[in-house]
Length: 158
Image (cartoon, rainbow, N blue to C red):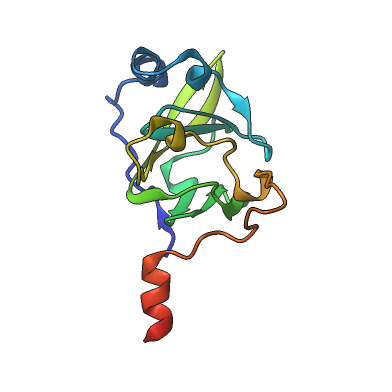
């Protein structure tokens, strides 16, 4: 189900600049640079979360945001226009997804934060090469289908 205004922070929430500064303090330099994710999105990451942003008009309000986050899928609609829909490169925790409005270089944007699901203690394995699964590059002997999640196996047996 799509939940309009999923976990939008209150107006008193600290700005994106403070959040990015926090990420920079706990991350290495490559993790704090915005990268192009296609679909008019920019993204960055640290070992715990993925953050992406998209420019929005000044007229866009909380009720215009429809964000649906599942373990490995994301759909974002702003003011009735689909911004992105696709399979994420790796798994996230849907219950921890949040968004907020912010200004970047004088332009208003929507910033979405996704909490990574880290199933390994190895930090190198927590790094996403890309935001979207379809953009991953595979070696010839690697699988091109996403891994089956334990819940999906259980559901298929029912």
